[in-house]
Length: 360
Image 1 (cartoon, rainbow, N blue to C red):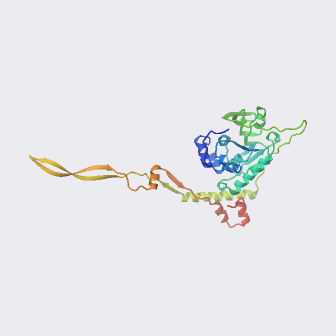
Image 2: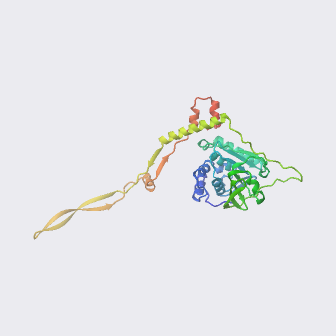
Image 3: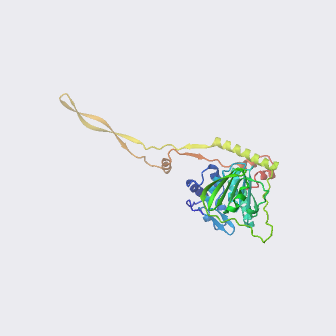
């Protein structure tokens, strides 16, 4: 599934194409997509395909097409503080983007059938936290992944505000998915070759809306011998953040806000002046004759003739300005969160904790 938009040269180019095709329609979804480089979730040797609007699969590792993820992110209508459950969480690519929007006071859980894929997702998550240039620009809800079959979730599990299922759901399992949803919550999943948005409007009432025609592999049902008890999936518990963790959240938030205020004061806004071609009037003298009485008297009369001439010695930068008349260029300030934390009068171990032990 995919191929709805042109291939990009890099992640930003891909996002530009998704925006132009109206798959990405909101700023928060765009920011999340730009913050997470899709290519980082590909195996070495396959990254050249990362920015095509195509699904990719290698062994148990799978990524849906970018246009599908775009529609899912928009349909979920994510907000800070919401709880999210990803059924078939795969590489963790979608869960990580969701975490950038729901923030540190949200809940971000994923269930994945294959142990090797969960390990891969955890590696990619750690790499994002430790090495991504985007991490310090967001408040993040770190995903928690568990191994299991999402059709065997414990009946007494808690409910979620937002749920996405990344595999085809049979009609027989539709109600099973719905009961995991809180009232007022949104569930997005493929049913009968349609990506569907389901909103729970009451204890026993739902509203459905088809989003996009899709083709997904069906959910894998757990095989077991007659009489064998299924392996129940226990979802991660809903824990209250520790005081230490809350302190880190608010210290980073305060420093980030101060950095934003300082950057706003220093932000250089340049308006490109409108460039005009100069017009030069050239005066020249001509001979004419005037009758005075009955005499013809020669007289010099000045005449103005406007001649349009182009400016000499045009420079390259002038040509660029002429093409970009009226545009405003904003010079972005560098992210200074790390420098601010390192300047705090705190023990080095505490600074490392505030930085999530990032080395850069």
